Image (tube, rainbow, N blue to C red; front, side):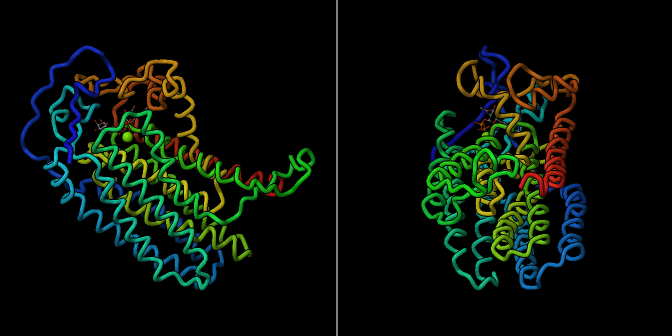
Length: 418
Ligand code: UD1
Ligand code: MG
């Protein structure tokens, strides 16, 4: 297997000048889930709200609740297995020279540590095992959902493979944009569900229809959504904990949205679509939380494109098969803004360096925004210099705020919009 190294010289976005690469220190970094207490306490607050909605607030039928709980039990096992496997896998990836240097620590002793890369491969595999085993326990009699469920898993699995190939081979970034379109194929080819959209009420007089069948165009829409979700997570990155943190926030919002929709509806097919989405969102959240215990500031592992692509594709299929892609796109508001700010560099109007990260000052430990068009830099320019951890918390806070905004919007537009 070709080895991949990422040194500070190769990754600097600050200067085009050659930089002397300091020799990395030889001891292996210590890999422990050191952020477990913080992650567990924040997650406990979320799960308390989730259980309140599931058991108290809504009347959900027993069988559906049982399936959700079995899935949650398996997902929790996935969390524990992730915690055990990541330190083991870290040693293996380091042995094969799959590591990166932490760019936002450059100039400090931490910047010389080889941080194991691509640990997304561990949680991708654990997620797939949980999702596959769960089929055995799902109590739904209708087996039609199995076709789409397995097609979704095939797309996610294909995406993990291509993400890992990218991490190992360092695919040129314009080619990277194409990888999700290949991975989306299993889902696109097997999809036999709705191709209709409900026209928003204020637009019905203009369109003349309440429901519009998009036919093949719907598959094009699914394809574009998968390509967008995967790449938008991947380019909103580069700060310890941001890749996994944004996924955890969105997956939590998806779970709350699903349980609210199941609770408020009496249509079995609609409930099934949202249950389907919970069955994938739960293992995505728990395995991501396991990874976050190692990836939160200061990261002792990096997640790699394996993770960003896996997470993006998982959320895309969750939104497509749960039939709430518009809501998903509002949860993705920071990623949409980051994409819009990135367009001039992505489409080649302005020079796009290999890394579009802030400038780190080793003296003060603060980050300063550069002119690269990313939300990370925009936040630093708007709200001033801060530490990497503070910046990550601000960005995740903004992500959570966008999710709350989405719930508010849905609440106020209910009945008027659809
Ligand atoms: C995308 C972004 C790039 C950003 C990079 C960071 C675009 C077009 N590309 O590239 O601007 O710099 O993600 O992930 O917007 N790293 C850190 N700290 C972290 C996470 C990553 O220093 O918390 C560095 C490490 O050196 C790591 C490398 O980023 O090895 C991973 O980069 P990679 O995921 O390969 O970058 P891209 O996805 O190609
Ligand atoms: Mg990446």
